[in-house]
Length: 298
Ligand SMILES: [Zn+2]
Image (cartoon, protein in one colour):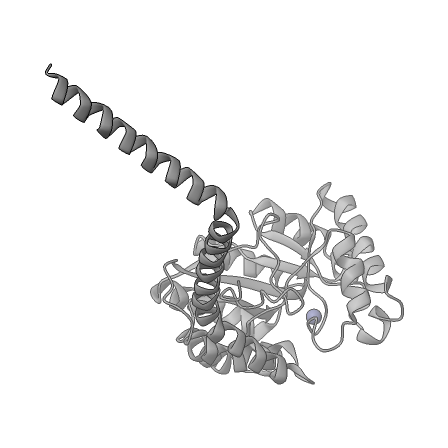
């Protein structure tokens, strides 16, 4: 290597070192500045993300607000009816159509016939039973369980003037249901339904006591109003209220006119693509209080 080249190389080295030194100095002197710039960048990013999330949830909040306003003085059936049109405004659903058949106030002289119809159609239902009826129809209670249906409880008194005399009154009634059911079948269930629904009669203290005891409270989204209807009216109501939803909890009772239309109702729901399911112990409860009455409320 020539002397000239050597000098040139040394000079380049010096230059690089000098630049390096300058950079280090700049960073050291401007540490505060850099921090501020970095913080500002993170802040701007956060604001951006929050805005996007807010925009997405704006619709959901508006929906919840309108429902809250709507709730005052309405029954579960009113809420379910008014809410059904809102469901259509939600995002596209990717899951299949599901319906839970729930049968209240039994067991009764109709229970065996109901089970036969369910079996014939290869579907299961959920029975919300009153204490005195379990005692009067123990074989039917066993039949419900034996055939793979779900046993749920529906209080002792079936009286809103007695269920809420103290925060634990309702819970105690369901405890009695548990004992009766255990005596008959040797099994347990945590699934319950309050007579007339949990809205507007149930105080928060009563709801809390039920939750503390581990009960799973189920209201309904579709009231067939079968107790005051003819078979034809029940069918009409089911058709009307299932054509704009793909996830429903259907309420019916152990009545003659209901039993008479049940087979046809099940066949119609199947034809419409509904999967008919019993409520499972592991399922998340759906009620007014937890905001999950409609499956879309997530
Ligand atoms: Zn009832």
